[in-house]
Image (tube, rainbow, N blue to C red; front, side, top):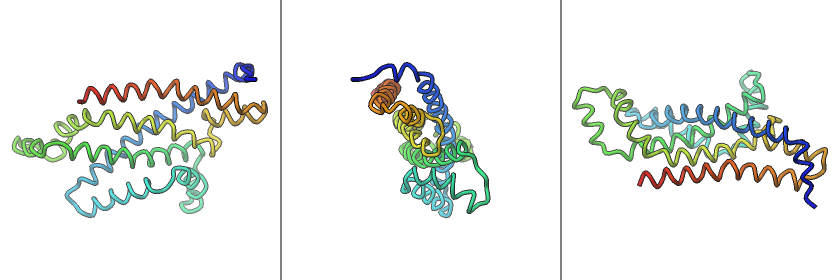
Length: 215
């Protein structure tokens, strides 16, 4: 029989885990967008060497599982780089760079989808390349990229569940902790699934609405 008392008695742990999950989602999405924008601009650079660097960054992070990056950031970075890093910083670093690689591809594709005449018109008005990008190209491209960016942000939230391997007290870690002393994994993980559904279903609905408005 499903025992709801397991949930009610430990509701504060689930609530705190959700707060931590949302906190890491926001932080890593913001940092990931910044990284993604920089890498997208590098990939669009007229210099071939910079384009190659941008491409390698994207392939480097997209083709290695996030779990590997999390473990490497926390355990291997201090060994190879001599940098002592906390589990929180390691989680933010790995998630931000990993998410940044995906954001970079969305941003690059969005910028390239614009008519080249926009850039030509900006140049005809005497704007430098960076001015045209900031004032004309990016504002238009971002409007088109809102749905895929929203979708990637939803994926980023689900990716935060891997932080539990570093013992970051996110929602999944709290679920594992509660399950360890209550011996009621069915109730615990059912509620975790319901919490994610409660957060992500409205988010997915909003992303679909944005996609429909774009068309």
